[in-house]
Amino acid sequence: MKTRGFNAFQLKLFMAFLMVFDHIGKIPGLLPTGWDGIFHLLTRCVAAWFAFSAVEGFLHTRNRLAYNARLFIWAAIMQLGNTILTMFFHSKGIHLENNIFLSLACGVLVLNLVFGLSKNSEKIMDEKHYLRIGAAVLIGLAGVFLTEGGMTIIPLMLISYIFRNQPALRTLSYMVLAFLLFCLSIEIYPTMGATLSMMLYNSDWAFITVLPFLHLYNGERGYNGKWGKYFFYIFYPAHLWIIALIAYLVQI
Image 1 (cartoon, one colour):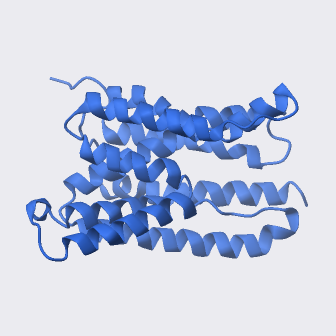
Image 2 (image 1 turned 90 degrees about the horizontal axis):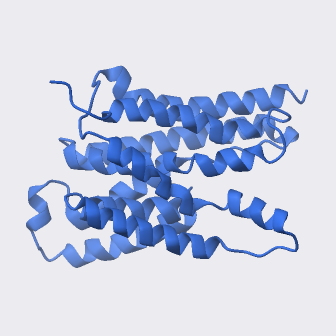
C-alpha cells in the first residue's frame, strides 16, 4: 500500500525548485520591480525545510560525527568557491555570501555537543557534560549571529529535535519563534511602500510557511542512491554560482 504524503527526497526536490526563485532576482533586469521581494518572502520555507532535514539526518545517521564533518567540508568548499567567484565578478557588484551549509553544520554541532555523538550517549551525564553545554552555547550564539539565516535555523533545529516526538508542541514552538522574529523585523519607514518592501526583505519570520510541508511529509526517506544523497550538496552551490555567472555576463 502506497504511503500518503511525500517523502523526504520528493520534498527536497521541490524545495530546490523554490530555492532558484529566491535567487534569480540577482540577475539584472530579469524580474519586474518588487518581485524579488515577493519571491524572497514566498521561499522562506526552503531554509526551514533543510534545517528540519538536517535534524532528521542527525537522528537517523549511523555516524553523527561524520555527518557533521560532511556539512563543514561542504561549507568550506562553498566558501572557497564564493571567494574565488567574488574575486572575478566583484567589478560588476556581484558578491557571493550565501552558505547555508555553515549554518546547518553549526546547528548539528550544537546537537552533537548537547545530545551526544550517539543515541546512547544522550543519557550519559559525565564530568565533561557542562563543558559541552558551554561550548554548545558559544557555538549556537556564533551560528545565530554570524551565519546565513542563523537566527532562524539554529533555534528551529533545537526545537525540531527537542519536540521530535511531539508535533503539536513543535508547531507551537515554531509559531512562538515566528512571532518573535516578526517583532524583531518591524521597522517603520517614511512611506508605506518602503516599510512593506523592507518587511518582504527582512522576512525570516515567514519560515512558518514550512508547516504545510511538514504536514505533507510522510516520514519516509524516499530515493536513497548516491545521487540523491549528494544532490543538495551539489545543487545548492551550483545554482548560486551559475546565477552569479549569468548576472556577470549580462552586464558585460
